[in-house]
Amino acid sequence: MQTLTSEQRQFFETAASTYAADLAADTSAQEYLKGRGFDGQAAATYRLGVVRRPLVGHESYAGRLAIPYITPSGTVNMRFRCLGAHDCKAEGCPKYLSADGMDSNLYNVLDLKRDSPFICVTEGELDAATLSMAGLPAVGVPGVENWQQHFSKCLDDFDTIYVFGDPDTAGRKFGKFLAREVKARPVRLPQGEDVNSLYCKEGADGLRRLIHE
Image (cartoon, rainbow, N blue to C red; front, top):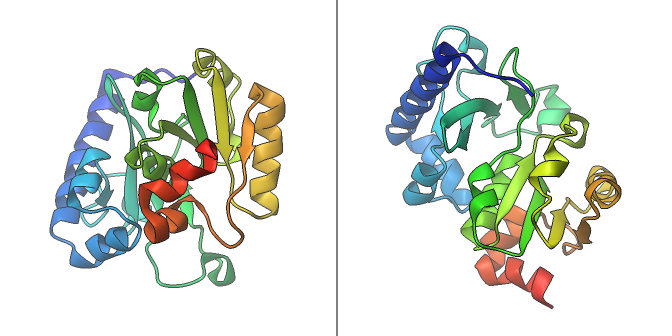
């Protein structure tokens, strides 16, 4: 597990504050987030931002959504999502980029402290934030290939672990991996829907129903 220096922590804090301020002045990025169900309050809760004034070393992330990894001790990592109105795979554009030189972290670890007998795990940050907004405590993993062994210990205190994977090959692979790794229960999403799209269509009740039926 990577330990950050005080300078690195300060850098990520400065980056999160700078990019959040950039989002406040960027109507196109705000519209993108609104289309995903994140209003201004939600964006502020998760300290989402957009890279318009990249800090030194972040120049290659210009124009991307900034997703900070917030912990009780501050911001410890950051990932960057493409905001282009195109099919990233078809365009050869990486949908997500990780901060250079950083190991993987669990996203939204503040939800590990919520008073709940269960926790949800998603493949991706915005899906985790979406579940959390719906009242379902959740953490996110930046892809199954980025799973770290110590993540399992973070989930030990929960009676039940639900895994929300997209209804595709990669999502099923993610669900099977976590079922084996942490005895998670895969949650079946409606065909053609992911966590965020279902939330935008049916709201929090649509997501809660998946685990309470």
